[in-house]
Length: 189
Image 1 (cartoon, helix red, strand yellow):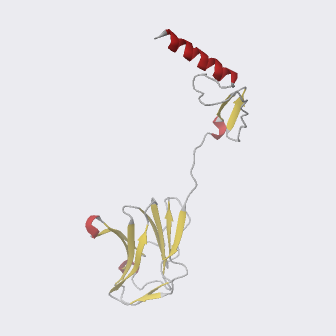
Image 2 (cartoon, rainbow, N blue to C red):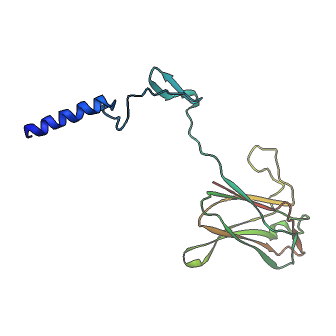
Image 3 (cartoon, one colour):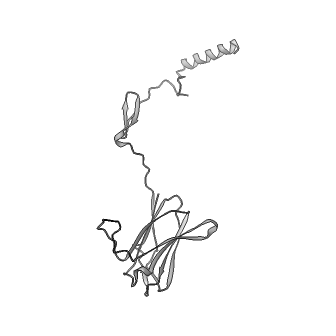
């Protein structure tokens, strides 16, 4: 290095020091100003060190959700018919929870089905699966004493694409009515 360059670098460092700038490793563009650390409920401060409190060492994001009414008015589906309930945008969510409520117990609960389908690549509908009202009197989980009402069909499905649709198929031998006020789709991140 040229001797003048050495001298110029030294003068520059002295000027920075006079102006109160620090050249400590890891600290750039900071003046000699004390920093106060205010620990939160999830942190512990010892001297100038701050660490995560092991008792509250959890990382969480807020749960984002959206609740959508399946239909705006009660909807009657004739025997041997199906009805779709629109395309629902689910981009950004991870799970879909669906509750379909009927006005009365179906004549043949196994023959009233709720189908969930996605639009796959190229716009082709892809059926994910179906649920029915045949198992409503059974417990929701093993060893549980909580059972669903016989007029409800509730289930959860994963989000597979950016949008999906719900259809109710009725071949129970009589018309069924989907209740608007208690039939909901709940999208959860």
